[in-house]
Length: 484
Image (cartoon, rainbow, N blue to C red):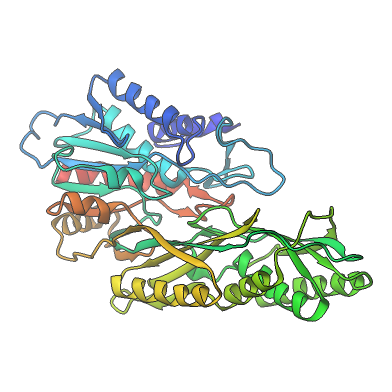
């Protein structure tokens, strides 16, 4: 049972994390979790406030003898990414997460776990509640709606925080300290048409489904070479249209801008008599994809079945432009950082392709540690889709967090980790977007760092957090707060 999670060590951290799994908190629906956090702070008798954006701040005074220490901000975000496996009935607005223990890991049944960033929130809550710890003044900042647009961080105003050191608790590898992250921008692309094309007499409707991909976080996992369901679907569609007389009626691929798409479904029509050859083509592509992604994707499933008759088709010229543009658009890793080996500098994620009445919407998330590279990737994508006749808009831009390897908090935390575990932690830059860069725009003199436990496959139903790494992180956090 999921309540067994409360018994894990450190018990206070896991108990608070369990509470969070019981509160629906997908991005954009913060009412329940912010109410919970306000009640938590007030029940402890701590100064608790909420800003205009909806962020929660809880202040804990220094323990006796530590009043002259610097004020440290523990920062994490309250929302989670809602992803469930196909066919699973889970209402993220109502249902709790069904978490369970699997060896040294906590996982969720068929959905995302919400350890991103529920563990960070729980760590800060445990610090606030523990009266035995030794530390200077602590401010715990819980931001809202980080996963889509970093709304809370953008809404944070100067003067709300008083601390000069910020420890972000939203990275995902224990034993590593992060000192920089990529910025990002959303590319929103639209193909529009006045009305659909009529069905072709005698053609047969077919639903083609690509499922079973791993997906994952489009920043953390982009370098793993996982398949993008949209790219694979349109690779197939190009041949089906060109050589088998297929016509596209609808497409639905991906579900979140910051998640590598795991599934895509297309409804097409094919001339009567071509169905057997189409079944063979689908089977051939399944075999091809399984071969190409052997060792990366284990459960690729590419199937077709007779579908209900669609009301209309996407006009042929729009269909062809769409197929060619998606085939031509860059996806995945584009460049690597020279100063931080094995770290992605720039990438794009073809996150969503969805048709509706009279239009097709495409969402691409571009990330880069370099503003010029980010602009270059966006320009390249804009050229591809503009030539295809689509409308291209950019939105939700946020800057990266530039590394500072001479950071005082970095030096202190390296020293503390060495004392605890007899080795130095790695110092890295993460390709995912952290809120540090945005917060730094309002607090330019703040010394920042990010850390976290071992967390794998965020933004997918395979998300899991390593139990033993949470204990190590807690010990490290406690020792750091005492040493600062």
